Image 1 (cartoon, helix red, strand yellow):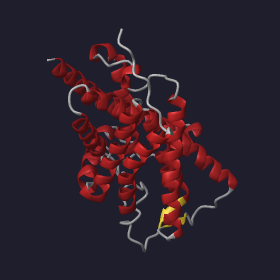
Image 2 (spheres, helix red, strand yellow):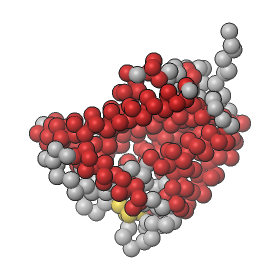
Image 3 (cartoon, helix red, strand yellow):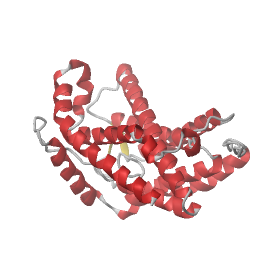
Length: 307
């Protein structure tokens, strides 16, 4: 009964987030288009703005209803501060950045990536790209890990076996990442941005779904992050890994482009998780995390003694 009650309120929060984002999207777009201060956000198409607003409204709804939903405190979802939490966070960041940076360097050396020919890579341009990539990485890394490896994964762990929790969390994580679009055709001044964007996102999910290597790569990303949580008994390593990966992906997208005459199968597209080499590296990350744990690069949070 408690699980049904929780499911009902989460679904209600999602529905309210959809309607709230639908109402706010037209006004948000007009605000972005009219204020010079928000000029950098004008590259976001209506569907992307709507998707971001849904996430913000959903998280706000969960926070406001946290008592009714019986959402556990931070310490119970791996955010407990312990003596090694900073070390785990830094270790995760370096593993994420170095791993994908080496992959991106190999792609550049092999000619699968090229420096963006239409942009002049001045020092100021690179610095802005670094700052924007870092900001995106921090926000995405923290929010997604709290939601997926924090709340969702620990909810599974309390109700089922570790293996089922890892697979269940990873399938949901991968499926939700397909709700994205390419260039949106929705007029920016339309009052029906929300419903039109929702339809575009559903169409995009179906059109973009590819079991291998795209979906497989996303599932493996989540499995690696779940393994890091099980080893460290916190989500700081996962936050670091996710932040490092997103940083490299975002920075690469801003300064590089995929070569048109080369198949993306080997190194993947702009997201880097949808290539054969990335799939192999993600599989190798699982024993590497165990190796890092034995060497002390990743440290387990001390278990709380029940009172």
